[in-house]
Length: 304
Image (cartoon, rainbow, N blue to C red; front, side, top):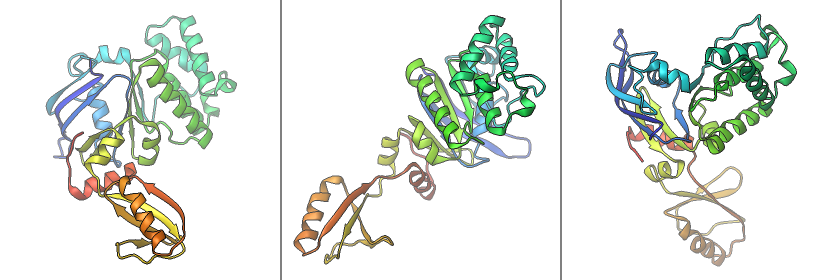
């Protein structure tokens, strides 16, 4: 069974704004799916639709076979949601917040406490377990909100900018946890962010969104194939005496655009035979950020 299936999903608001426009998605269980686009692209609206918090204008969707428009309460039992403004109780301690939400999801008091303490340890918040939230920094609150979303051991986790406000060490810690949840526990992660470089580090597949429209979906490898504009190869040499087109970079290197890696040895051979010394050769594949802007230029959509 697919974790998420979306077919021709649209959401129009009363002011004629089209937040989601004919969206199609199919996400496997255990994926860390990056749903990527700028603020206002339709990411949060999609999450609300998938959790039954909004009703679609057109189209259909299922989350582990359940229709959010009819079975939202069922979906809430096996999903965890982390938004940038997660509701927590300032006058309660960190562990008391987690125990409260654990019991809301049907866990016993003891189960909630044990699970809460385990999550606080994983997120390096044990030292603040008995401190009220009024003393928590933004980063501490964000990590506690992630713990709250995980307290009932959900099958699917919806994360909206999960590393917002975190220091670099905490980002690494949260990333390790997210990857462990997917790889070792089979939890599906639906991660919304506008930070494409961050998404490239952590996600296994992607959906690239702009103004409510899906530009492309797929793995990084499949997205590169869809938007291939040649392989960029940077060569450091003392000089160049070639007819082949190249670009001189500011760091003293020369950049060539080739059709594939197979052309690199012949290019290097030509440079050496022309009397130049080659110091280094590096092939640069398209980043997720470059893919996104290439798709915007093409006008999308494409699917992989």
